[in-house]
Image (cartoon, rainbow, N blue to C red; front, side, top):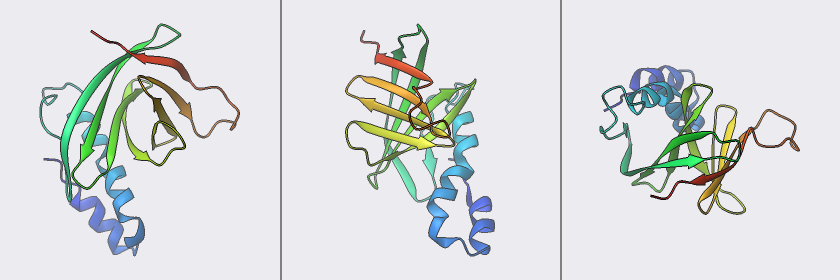
Amino acid sequence: MIDARNGVSRFLALGGALCGAFVALVTIAIPAAHAASGNGHDGAPLAIRDIHVQSRQTFSYTCASGKTFKVSYFNASNGQSFALVPVDGRKVLLVGVVAASGVKYVGDRYAWWTKGPGGDLYDTMADPNAKPIVAGCATIMR
C-alpha cells in the first residue's frame, strides 16, 4: 500500500483542502510509478488512501514511429481512472478526465488520449496546434 498521508497533511495544513485530492495524486505519483515500474512490485495492487483500485489492465502499444511501450490502466471504486504512461524514461501517473471523444488522461505536462484501440501522447505545454509527441499508437493484439 502506498501511503501519501505525510505529504497530504502538510498540504492541508496550508489550507489547500479544495485541491487535496489532486495533490494526493501528485504526492503519490513517484511512488506509484516506482511500484508499477517492474521493480519487483509489478503484481502488487496500487492502493492510494481513500481511493481503492478495483482493476488493473496493461496494454502494449506500437506507434507510427515504430516506438513500442506498455500502458497500465487503473479503475477505482469511486469511478476515477488512471493511466501509468512511460514518458522520457520515467512512468507518469495520469488521471482520467472528461473528453469530447475517447478517454483522456492528464498529469504533469502530458495528455494521453485514447480512442478505441489507438492513442496519442501530447505535451500540453506545447503550442495548442502542435502535433502529438507520440502519434498513431495502436494496441498490439495477440
